[in-house]
Image (cartoon, rainbow, N blue to C red; front, top):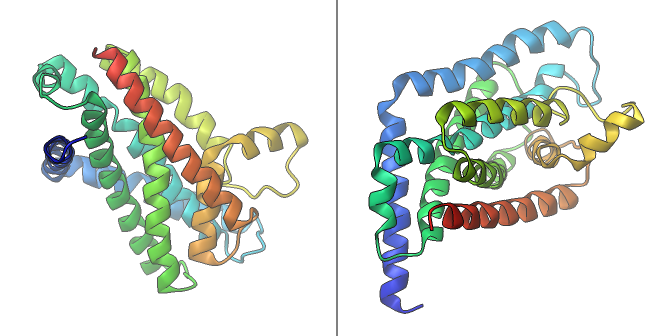
Length: 256
């Protein structure tokens, strides 16, 4: 690629990122809803189960906090694919596809914008959880968790873009999203530890990339994890790279 092509591609990514940020800023109800629902889980469900579930790391609410952050990243990142369907329905997608730049960078701009909004929600949840009593090990662990959030979000928004590229209607995307998100969430370690799991359940838990993302968050925030941090980081890095590549290719083929 020439310097001009690189500059044009980066401008495309930046413009689409900025557009997603402006849409997120103007949607007050979306911001409130994205924070309120995970906090409801953490405060109500966490408090209810705190007396009945024991974990090695101490308080169950502390254990649950990284899982709730992971849940928020999962939902927000996959929902990032909805913007592609909206843009297709309102004709905006057709306008940006005629730009003299690879469609991969168009998809990348949408992905980076979606990941940023997901990270904002994740960081806000992390801060609020700290205020309500969740004890983090260090400030450096909190900084590392932001990088982990980025990788988790990048992987799942790649999946969201891939799905949105193949589904024409907003309603159809919502149905598929519901079918996918809850199995991913339930078969992760968001709400329960891996120890003493039945063998049949242990298999999908270990195959689930969200498990490794949550365990990496748990290690950085709480200093404990059931999976070695090197393995967790390797899985989420590979997952992010593979899914953003698949998402870009799916977007390119669907709009060719």
